[in-house]
Image 1 (cartoon, one colour):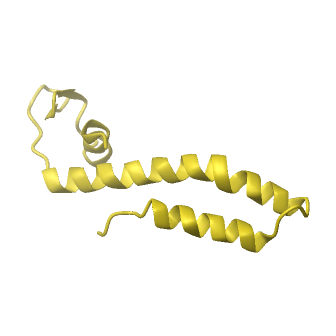
Image 2: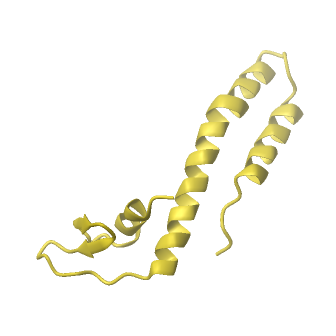
Length: 91
């Protein structure tokens, strides 16, 4: 979970951070909602984990299904398993 990336994603006026303190272009502190930032960081982490798992696990299975070496149902099951393994946080 990367808090800094989440701050930048949620608060476009932030141009610089020092630790977990955020600042705008004029150097003014930007107050942010810590809970929202943590939730966004968790979502971003799940997205990154899913993308990695899709690339290494689901995509090869998809291409095997395209060649007739596996079934589309096997691929769909793998996608569902990855989604289950890396769920998005509740909103």
